[in-house]
Amino acid sequence: MIPRYSRPEMTAIWEPATKFRIWYEIEAHACDAMADLGVIPRENADAVWKAKDVEFNVARIDEIEAVTKHDVIAFLTHLAEHVGADQARFVHQGMTSSDVLDTCFNVQLTRAADILLADMDRVLAALKTRAFEHKDTVRIGRSHGIHAEPTTMGLTFARFYAEMERGRKRLVNAREEIATGAISGAVGTFANIDPRVEEHVCAQLGLNPETISTQVIPRDRHAMFFATLGVIASSMENIATEVRHMQRTEVLEAEEFFSAGQKGSSAMPHKRNPVLTENLTGLARLVRMSVTPALENVTLWHERDISHSSVERAIGPDTTVTLDFALNRLAGMIEKLVIYPENMLANMNKFRGLVMSQRVLLALTQAGVSREDSYRLVQRNAMKVWEQGKDFKTELLGDAEVTAVLTPAQIEEKFDLGYHTKHVDTIFKRVFGEA
Image 1 (tube, rainbow, N blue to C red):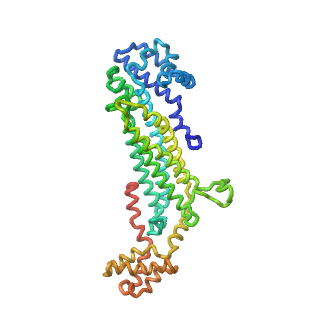
Image 2 (image 1 turned 180 degrees about the horizontal axis):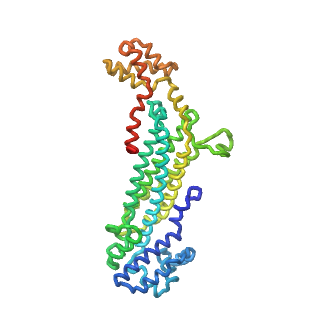
């Protein structure tokens, strides 16, 4: 991913130097286990650990790979240059390249997941803070983009919180599912390496031994991991899209923070555009771009092929780096989002009481009028508001058919905003708990 959308902690996971360090640890821990089992001499295993402080030369490994056309062999050759050819002769014994590659990839993905979980914690904290801040800030709810009935800005933040919390739980599960390693040798039969070596290496790296591998770890695990990141990205876009709608000039119920010295347009000095949330919408597309290739990677020939390899070299870093950056941008946007309660009330009253139509409809049916006739009576007065700019309550009070069954006081009561917010606390307890 380009530096513009990258954060150093996440990109460090995918640096070649980090990868080679993990490869080294896999090989060294495997040597330890084989020495403990009496398969190789202890002094050879100890010799491998003498390279623990070595900074592997990425350029040198690339130079060797240019000849060998094999990245793992290139690394092992370079490792032997530090350890000594004779001392390194038992390195990689009974192992195959995928043992190293797949186990390393899953270590990287679990580390990436840990960063993403911390990112989501920041997003959740921001959403919770803003939810309680605006728990009782009334705004109009919309369906199909059209005014529906009153809600609160706090409920808007709360539903995003609940959605992101579900995403976090999915990521915890996806991390657990991807945290496996395989040191099972060619075609996964352990023919040339003891299963206890795999158990030891996985324990040292914080992984679980793969239940059953072929020559590779099954890719359904990775498909679920990247699908989970895709869902989180969609939830992120859901929030971003709501903010973009609220920032439209004719709505202006909320606005991204506009800092001193910031410019909105190269041509129009008055502009204050929702650039952060538009950017988040685009970044969400990049994250979701990895989902289909990850799903297609599940299908491999027999015990292995490498059709998945080129895909994962791209989507592993690109997807995690992008989502890490995006979640932090999302959190910052929420933390600084400017809310305009007065505009929310003004927008809700733009059609002069029209949003209370359902309350009047229900009152008429409860007074004995058929639902069909009740709908007709309310709608004919509502259309006068749409078409002539009339006041809804005034029209109802002047409609003889309506006042024949509802008193003026009963009609007046149907325009109480508090009616629509009476269960906000109940919803908040469901989302955030009793505390």
